[in-house]
Image (tube, rainbow, N blue to C red; front, side, top):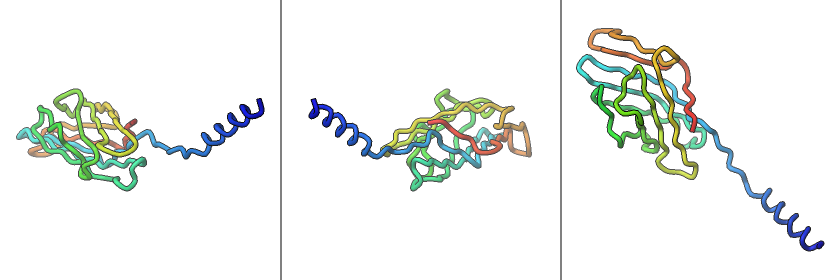
Length: 145
């Protein structure tokens, strides 16, 4: 009986000695804006900061594609560690879902967030000559992962 109790205490102590990896449950997105030109060109920019990967971030994320169609599925942020995707298809800057998927690393991450005009994500029609639509995020967006 004493041996069994000793074994349970030893196993419990060993379990407590295993280091626990702290994980942040969001990617912070800042300097987030998008524009559609009158000639159907779309551009998007944001900076992704991931506390789970401080050596890889912050990183710039930039896209250029034809507005009204889907950007390339292989689009990545500048550090090549995050795929940039739009799971609902072609992007309408007034309403779309942005997804970031971590390419490699010990902590798997897949986050997405819905952006709609009229919230902190605001869009302006024809803000200047040659620009059909201009949108930006007011503040830092926290994308759950």
